[in-house]
Image (tube, rainbow, N blue to C red; front, side):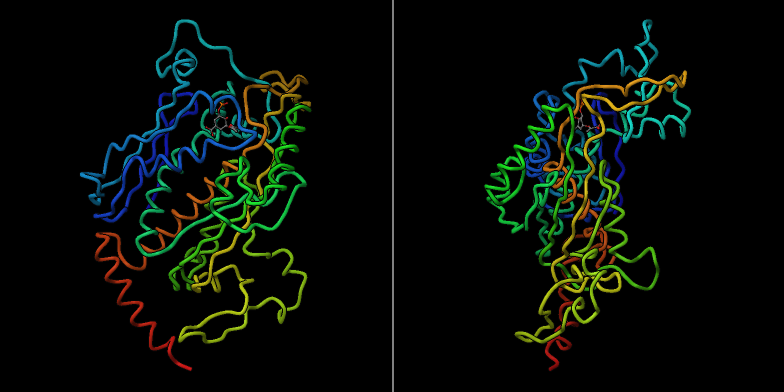
Length: 382
Ligand code: EPS
């Protein structure tokens, strides 16, 4: 399974093409729209989210409510595009738009302009923007639907925003009811206050998202080659999210300070199946899922567009200049949790198809059932 996305933040649309989805998967636009809506929410989002009402148009790979095995094409219109027609015109316009040249530290502006030879940072901003994550979330909803067929579910919760932090419980209803996606009402309030204070100061805030995947099929991924290790593939997918700066499985950085006897998860047999007395491996050993929940955290830096800009320089002249300022968010951590769910779902759906085939959902389920039969005698060994 592979995903390509295209489209600029203020162009006509963002587009996802998800190739390799098995035929026979039930999927609807309304199901995808639930996640698109969740991605738009969160205290600290900018004015753009009041313009957009993200909704998917399925334009390939689905007929009569089921995937056909052809690439799934998903389009999300940018309502704001009507305000950017001149700036974003694919054809040259008589009156060219002003170029953006004052570089924002932390954004892709400088690195992107150097790499591609752009003289207008707009050519970088438009594609580096996290607007692209709408396409990822739409594709991720398809991956989640496939995982749902085999009993795998993905949950996320905001663990921290700025220095407000706590222990996630993944209480679904409480997380979804919170405007910062934290299950704890006191912590939610403190997070909102921290975001409001950053906004009032012309500043931004980052934070940490916790992820939990339950009902994981054991044996996904492989230790046999470096690029087949699933923890590496998951980390890459999560690190590819705009603003992501770090990933840890379970409490890896704390575990790195402890002894092996305190870190590794003792194995026992419970109700005829292998089980663990704790899960500090975060659900993967040797780059392979072990059937325990996958536990992860992703660190997101504060948004790099600052209303009180940092000192910077002009791309064309090199002259000192404050960084470019344009409409942006104050904090995207709540939305980033929804994007992180999509990215891990895409990797796990890919690994599932790799092991059990991706022609047809019923074939995949049949292969999985046979695999579970193979595991059973081992699980019954005492
Ligand atoms: C985003 C839309 C963008 C930004 C944000 C993500 O809208 P605009 O640039 O029109 O305000 O709010 O992008 C960034 C955080 C960024 O740094 O580019 C969205 O729909 O998620």
